[in-house]
Length: 179
Image 1 (tube, helix red, strand yellow):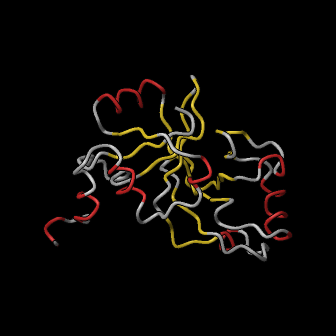
Image 2 (image 1 turned 45 degrees about the horizontal axis):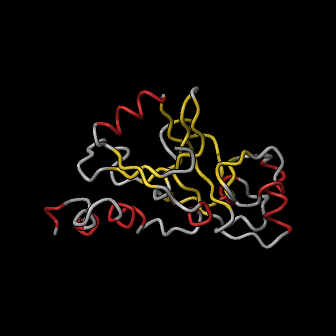
């Protein structure tokens, strides 16, 4: 399950996770940590770290847990010490100050690092139960595509991989009565 995507069922009326796509970045018996890939906030890295000269990176709403903390996924591997490998070329966390230095001194793009305020978390049994109840679809994904996905389109694109006909839900909009 580590490195997979959770795609919210169109009928999920959770309030927080409606139309979300969550990347599972850490899956163990102690619990599951994931980040919502398609909820971009109005904030940039420079809003929380003004000293970062190249801080024009968007911050995404990673989930309802620890929303006052900044987390990150990246493709920089060993360049950022203490990173945890999620799958192949995708890494979670590491030395934040080292990353900030790399951002300011190398040509790092949004396709190499994504920042999240907060995370999504579950107990293993809790998530497995939600999947059995069809609240979530599970898709495998190529790690290098995670950071280059279009936040506005990913839910519909991933939903379409489940069953033909589901993509139409992404075209309806949040309020069907407004169509």
